[in-house]
Every structure is written in C-alpha cells, then in structure tokens.
Length: 364
Image (tube, rainbow, N blue to C red; front, top):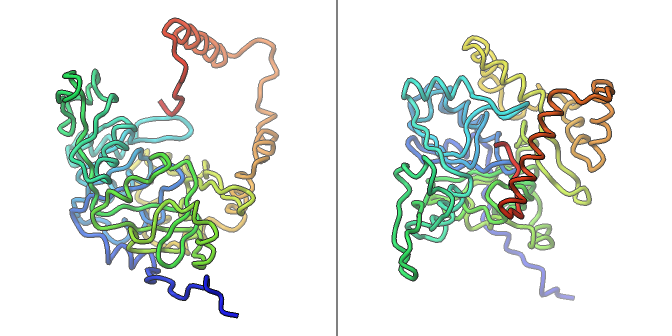
C-alpha cells in the first residue's frame, strides 16, 4: 500500500569535512560568530587555526564568552578584534589570560567588552533585520562608551532609552548533538544565547554546524520539536564526535547522554600559557600536528569515556567520592568557608533591603 507520508526528497546534502568547511566558507576579514557554552565548536576553532595559523587574516570574533576559543586564534595572529562579555581563563577560577593581556597591551587586538545580555540583544537585532535593539543592560557602566551603544528618545514615553547596534556576522558556527545532511540541527541547552540561537539567524552567509553524529531525515522529523537551527540557514554540516571538547555537551540521558568538561585539559592549557615556549609546544602538539581524528586519538578512549560517565545524572557521586579525602573534617570553618558565609549573609541582607527576587549567579 502506498504510504502518502513517505517523503523521498531528503534536501540538499551539505555534509563535508571540517577542513572543507573552513576553506570553502571562511574568508580573511570575516566577522565570525562562535556559539557558547554547550554549543561551542572547538573542532571549528582548532581547524580555523590549522588553516590560517601565522597569517594576518584580520578576523573579528564575536561570542558571548571566550576562553581557549578566543585565545588560540589570537595567539596565531588570526584576529584583529574580539567582541565578547569575557575573555580569559575560566577554570579552576576566572583569571587574566597572558595571551589576551599581551595582545591588548601591544594593541594588536581590539577588545570590545559587552554584557552577555547586550551581545544577545545585538544578535537578536541582526536576526530580525533591525538596526538596533533597546536594552537596559549598559547604561551606568563604562560599556556605555562603546561605539555600538547610544541613547535615543522613547517615542512613546519621551524617556531616554539605551540601544545596542545590531550584530550581523559573516558566518556563524555552532556545535550540536545531531543533524541531518541538510543541516536541520538538534541542540540542547545551555546555549549561551537563550532558547533561540540568534547568531544563526543573524549571519549574512549562513551557518557551519559541527555535530556529534549525522542522522537520517526521518529521525529529525520524529524529533522536529528539538531542532534549533533549520537546514535552510546551514551551509555546511560536519560530523565531529566530541567536537565541543574540552567544553561539555549536554544531552538528556534518555537520548544517549553527553559528556562533561575536561577540566584537566583546560588546566594543562592554562599552565602552557605561562610561557611562550610551553604554549608553542602545546599548540604544535594538540592543534597544528593533528586533525580532529588525531586529536581524539591523543585524548584516548579511556579519557573520553570517563567524560561521558562524568556527565551522567549520578556522576556527581563518583566525583564527590574522589574528592572525599580532601574535604576538611574540622568542626571549625576554614577561612574560605568563613568568607562564603559572610558573602552569603551580605547578599541576603541586600536582597531583603532592596526587595530583590531573582539573582543571576555566574562566573562574575
């Protein structure tokens, strides 16, 4: 019997290697938007460095927040400008990056600092084809001096209102869990930009997506409600297992599960940035001398499977057990614990006094 719902057309096949995607779709001088948190494609960042390392390509990077994904292209001389809410080391605690500091001091890279919300609003304006977006995030801070921020008169109330200029990247890059060959991409939070990946819709020349696996069109149809980037926006689909490493990728356990951050890897990179010689060795070892497959081989199956296990819902139990011996059993609080208690009391006092109901807790 003829099944009227068997659709033969599978769309345009956009599958290619990460090398092909970079060489075909990325040009010198581009404004490149990078996804953040669990949608950050480190696979792309590494390949960008492999293709353009040592060349003054004048890239401009825009991303909600940056660590290694910003530091490596800056180190390779690829970047002339970074637009972000944070640029530096993230783990084990926030700290300045020697790479970022050197490039800022010598003026080789311009850094434009925005709030996380303002960057998302700029991308939202670009996605909606607007020239700007109103914001209450910037006024009263030094960020109000940025070229992309202005005050205008609210036409309805006459009040002074802050607006941020639209951000329209030349190309946008995300990492997702899976996609079909046409680029319909399933991603899970956190994305760093909210539910909608605004950078994908704001991009002038489309999106490069790297994914853990490429699936059949029928799989996407069954899970269409999870698609965050529609195929019509996508120019390249790259299958790259662990493409978000050393960052994490959240996937619900009933759909297979994801993997956790590789903190040891992040700390090793941080140590390497302490001297230019160590950094040069690290870059050669982990980026320039290998492709993505070689990168995964260097990490090894044991390490990768450990990260998968660490991301399980009960993974915190094993992590706690590993650190149990280092937890102080003293009845007297340590100085760090005292500081946390004092800080918590001050926050509670301020919330009660000002009537705050919501607190944003993050790297700051």
